[in-house]
Length: 491
Ligand code: ATP
Image (cartoon, rainbow, N blue to C red; front, side, top):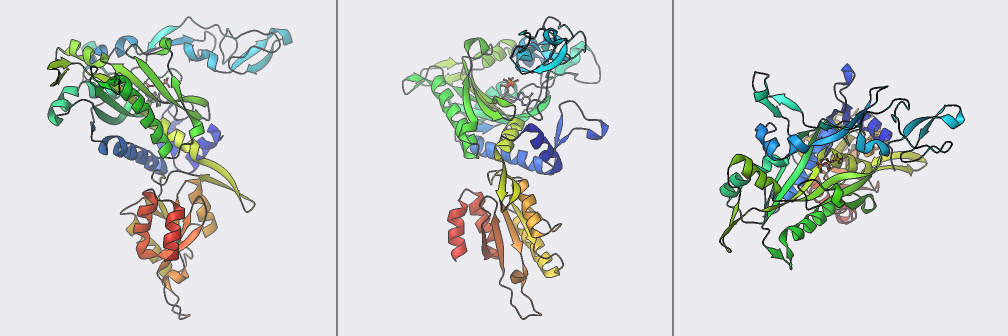
């Protein structure tokens, strides 16, 4: 399993993710996506939107604003309940989430060994004095304060006056933008239950202990769905909300598998009753085996009718659906698959990372799914001294870039260029050589063919340059290299 340090270093070196405001010393837990990172992130969002919103007849999309009416957060329970228990060290002043203290390694000055300093793994006792951690896990000396509840919402002021009446919040989840628009979408789009609303957007949480690279940050992006079902319906003999909850769990799992995440790195975690949020009937997390261990990748919750009822109560508007068959108004139940874009990106990145041995040399390769790879095709001239080769390579890149993410690179010899593309996960390289353009001095005619190299098998085939758009359309669209190369390579 790749370490987080290796990923962080690769991400910086190859333009995926940079520390935010790095020249000023960085901003705690904020990261910027570089040229390759933004392509990867956009592609993740694009396939998610296509697969879950555009291709499904029972889904529509929404893009609500980040700043909302402050009462939204009272109604949703965030003002009162969106808190984490926080403790402070009286000595070093570090802050911790009380519920995460036992999940971290701790510093211990052991009385049984004349006060020697040890770092003891999480949840373990000292092997010498057998004590458990009671003091600050970081400095090993300070007492910790009793836990206090800390609200994770970022407060801000709407308008030019900083007064209490103008207080509002940066949204801590995109979901509420969907609930408050339920009636608008229902009426304008004439939907029948069950149907869902999908949204992708930024969310903000003033996390007490952000960290682990882009896993937990204070500003992040979510891809959320609120799927509304009629609680009086049954499907295959079961309550509709329970049926759809299971379906969404399966669909989300299948989605990550479809884009290449290995089955052994994914698992489901059912929340125990005590772990459930105040609104939830059942929540299942999809966990990924991150370099930091198994952790939540996304959550799929049955939020019941909690949110719509709360907003109806606080706004005074009826947020109901008229069931034509039963001639009654119902408040729909909601299934919420909620994924973090940044966590998904980290999972795709960690999962794609391989170190391989090729002819006695190490190669680092990111085996991204072709639809997610930041660069789909790299066009490389075999000789950069030859104008006609360079011109042809540029022309091919220009043509390909109308359909795919394509780059041109001539800054090294071909072997090196291939390795560099492997390291950022480019699934295909196209090489333009002397045969492609011909050699008039030697009387050799141009054959108009180029070499395509496959990242994973490192096999190469020669194809007509004019066929490239069609060939990559098939390869990036889901056909296997074996199938396409066997057919195209033969012709
Ligand atoms: P955690 O237990 O890790 O704090 P959560 O259960 O509070 O997460 P949800 O409220 O269910 O998270 O949010 C849905 C998804 O949004 C998470 O599964 C995760 O992918 C993403 N997410 C939540 N908080 C953060 C964060 N601080 N940084 C990055 N992604 C986040």
